Amino acid sequence: MATKLLLTFAICRLIVTVGLTLEPTELLRLGLTVDPFDVESASVDFGLMTKVEPLAVLRPSSAKDVAQLVKAAYESSHGFTVSARGHGHSINGQAQTGTGVVVQMSGVGSGGKPRVWGGDMYVDVWGGELWIDVLKSCLAYGLAPKSWTDYLYLSVGGTLSNAGISGQAFHHGPQISNVHELDVVTGKGELMTCSKEQNPELFHAVLGGLGQFGIITRARISLEPAPQRVRWIRVLYSNFSAFTKDQEYLISLHGNQKFDYVEGFVIVDEGLINNWRSSFFSPRNPVKISSLGSNNNGGVLYCFEITKNYHESTAETIDQEIEALLKKLNFIPTSVFTTDLPYVDFLDRVHKAELKLRSKGMWEVPHPWLNLFVPKSKIADFDRGVFKGILGNKTSGPILIYPMNKNKWDDKSSVVTPDEDVFYLVAFLRSALDNGEETQSLEYLTNQNRQILKFCDEDGMKVKQYLPHYKTQSEWKEHYGSKWDRFQRMKMKFDPRHILASGQNIFTPTFLSSSNMMVMDIPIPIKQKARESIDF
Ligand code: FAD
Image 1 (cartoon, protein in one colour):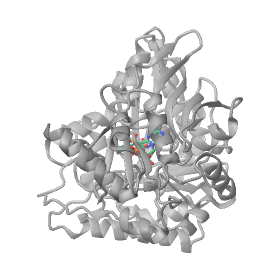
Image 2 (cartoon, protein in one colour):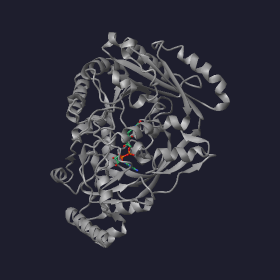
Image 3 (tube, helix red, strand yellow):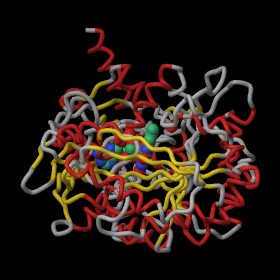
Image 4 (cartoon, protein in one colour):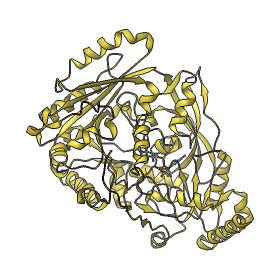
């Protein structure tokens, strides 16, 4: 009874706030919930920096539920927004909305199980499915998707709305390059199937489209035979140009004589080498940066991370293949660290770190992350100015760096990347702590992110943000450059009332003036919790 009252109260609030003309019974029919737990969890994200409460939450059990809601929003005389939320792993409130309904795509009871088509080598998955569950379903058939993210507790719809990248992207392209077909609910509430052949404009717009053109309810993802095991190798460099030369060499290789995964990270302070991503190193043999020549290099080291997949039947040749590849690289000779593990454990490696951080209360802290695509021609300037300059030998989380080949990205998709054949992902994946250490505070790290962006701008580097975050439309126009006109045209075609994914702050819903939007969608900063120390 109490729940029903709460529901009616909140629906009335929804009606009053956005002036809906729908009857409360109609909204009940749409299956909206205002369960305080659902509303609370939909109002925050992994970034933990802003809070925006939706008016209600929908937990759909099918694409039809999603279409019904979006159609109601599109046809209502005043309008309300609809934001799909995958697993809420955005940083800056991209899946939040204060002027409408959040559609909670991930979670129990949504969508249906992945359906593997072994003969055709693809899998059909619900848009809110987590990649870990896609992997498990495919492995039952001895198959697996080709392109990954480092962390698997992300939703298919969420990563395909950005790009989805990891160390396989140099070869297979991002996840958006490995999709055959999508079902999408557009901003008019129409459920459409699209692919390169069928409704291609919608298909390309949605891939990397930041949720602006439709809600992905099904994705058909390309598969390959799953490897059984992975040889995982880390080698260290003190010389940045040797490091990038070797990374670029490895991503230029084709065929079998190559590694399957190429990433890397920057080590600017000694504590970090035994951190989050380096449970890998033997604790009985901790690495001393000072013993590896980083002192002559502004205290900075670079770790190259590579893997070779194999099947137990080819285990005999794996050592020779790896040795032949490593021979061509110029890392510090005493710095080879190797481990061997099942494929699934390698792909799911970050989850182990998550559990460790959660147990220490270090997961649910603010994450002022910054992800940049840096053109190859500017990466040495970036090293000098940022890794050896702005960071000042202090960091508060991993800094990834790895190159990708532009020809593996389809320029028709909505993502923007630098205009060079090779570009780097540089990802500052930092956690803010309120432990009295100024360099770990949210304010300090946010300010440092601004300095990094300013430095890139003043140096004319033409970097592009990945998982972009801007506050004004003119910044978005600059981000999209020559793609802006098409982006805007597709928005007019597929979401003419600008009701979808308003948390991205690209378009103002047409039922709100910009000033109204400011009042209703204003994020509340989340207060930092005090922590004693950062200890990964
Ligand atoms: P959400 O944050 O819930 O949503 C993101 C955006 O997509 C929102 O605008 C939302 O409205 C929209 N959206 C969500 N679902 C749909 C849908 N079904 N249809 C249409 N639009 C939708 N990214 C990488 O590329 N590589 C990595 O290795 C990587 N590692 C990560 C590790 C961690 C620990 C975290 C927190 C993030 C990582 N990311 C990585 C970033 C990740 O790809 C983004 O956060 C992405 O948004 C996916 O998260 P999500 O599924 O929770 O989406």
